[in-house]
Image (cartoon, rainbow, N blue to C red; front, side, top):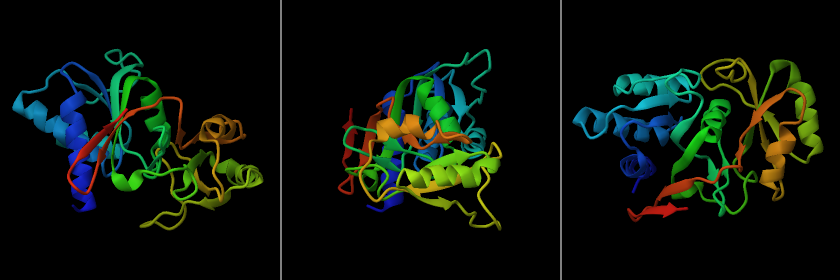
Length: 233
């Protein structure tokens, strides 16, 4: 099966199994999470779901919710009250303990806010996202304020990481996040303690958030090329 079909299978399976009427639902960002949003919208249109209060994690997911008729609320809205029943999102890497790297789409700050505000957390992915160690192949994104670009990069290099400023593709210059910050992508030449680094990286002055997600272990829906959806808890 093609990768896009795998992503769709995982997203639809998670939406159908986990989303219930009346939920306060965090909806993630990226090419796999978009299939979750679409399926939730379809189920609402069919009448199988109702009363969904959605918190989208990016402009991309907010626009998708609008397209598929899913009501959108801020996390601070009184209807949401700062907590979610469930968040479903994608991931860039997943290790054997269901720890994650996220933020390839640049939305890690709000994705982490949603994940850690949720009673339940689910990840949808294709099998290519499974790794033994986080951060040695796919880079870990670090969101920094613009003034900390050089100082934060120097501190990250002292930890042994190779550091790259993320450049935009269809715009001259660096990627600017939805909160006006920059992204430093870092890669380690050796296995690292992702749980310890999640805390340590945020102690660097000017770092807003990092792409290690280790403090909440999700249920993971993994689409395999043979058509099987593995549910890994």
